[in-house]
Length: 215
Image (tube, rainbow, N blue to C red; front, side, top):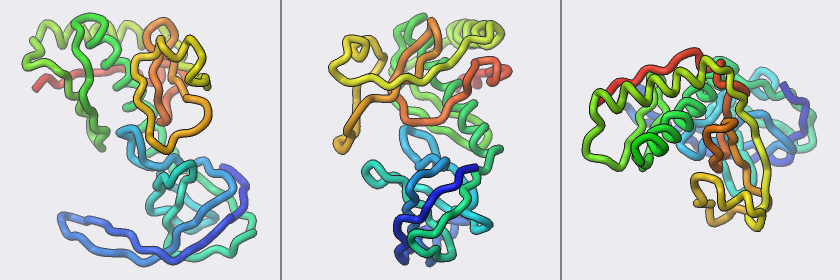
């Protein structure tokens, strides 16, 4: 939870899809002085939660700001309590850290680069730049990943500047065109360091276990 302040409130519309049917919902875009809700980005869906008791239906990134879509307005300058839907957040944390781990070992063991990934309600899908992953390769990646989970490896967040020599050691270097300031690094101790804006577990043990469903 976070106590913060409303910066602005403007009428807005949100396009939604429910059971294959598309519709538009009227509401308000709220900008807060600070927030605990993650806007969608980096392959990760946005958080859900509440501002006071009003549900937040979408959180999007606009430049450096997170914009919250809600069905009811708030007065600019008003103090508000922001709460995150923890079950959704923790599921995203587990899946995103798991993706970093699989991506790291697919690369280090076999040179397979991750080209895209999708975080879903039931599973994550990771696409690799190879026409074939054998059952033996998938089992080796899964075994190595689960070994690191059992070792309780810490996951740390670091902020570095692009002119820091350490920046050249991270796995990827793509930045949004509107990025400014330090770069956020997710560091799985002794395993992987990668730029990422998403939410992650603090220790790999929080993943419990990982299973690959080879396609």
